[in-house]
Image 1 (cartoon, helix red, strand yellow):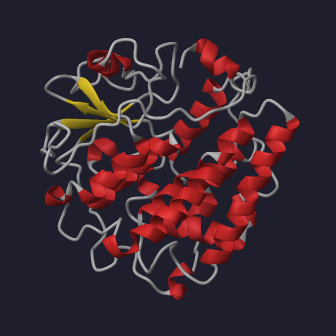
Image 2 (tube, rainbow, N blue to C red):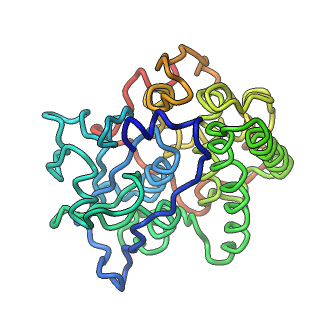
Length: 338
């Protein structure tokens, strides 16, 4: 994703790239990458909704000590994700300036861009996987030996068909739909994508009007995937991506649901609104050529009462909340609601 790529947004039809590196880190190591504490580093951007899924999952499951995390600068340059937030502009564990270096160590001339989340093998410094769809499911199911005591079951075996169906609909119409609307090059293309976003949101609102979570009485992977789009909705998708039929804050059910999740340990404490806004408004120069980052919206509402507990359910099922955020991973004050 270079300068030309950034300026091209809004000038060419948007297509979501497939993850080129699909190896899996598993308990039995069948792809050559066994689950092992301290071996891998999760590289993310707090701006990216796909990476934010992994940040939330890692925290809910208590994998902070087993799986280190590197956070890239939300504003990319011509070599994409960079580690300019770290001293000397290098990731302190991998010793690299750009995530692309880990990609290059895995394969020279690979197709597609440099994306997050990315799982990197620390000893070799090479990328293992950038499969954002599979990565979090494996954290929930393959890394169980390293989960914290009381970790929730985010992908329960008895509900997987239903979870998969909900996640597929959310992905097509909401997670990816906002991008298809925002990067549309023709009016008809935009209108079709935008209509699909709000049609699905209305259906999700109906589903959530009588139940606290998307599937069953506890949090699952499906809630994580919807949350990462909802938390960005009013801040960037409503204006920047022109998904403006209504704001999230104007939909009573979805706004209450999003606030419920935001106030649940492991969700809101991973969100950095400063990173989110600076990434979208400064990087997508094809649709915001001035690079001006808006002051709004007011974030205070994220901390207001939601009353969703009246619907029953327990966020962590039979488990417990995660502990405090590790000191080195706390979101800076400018990225949090006051």
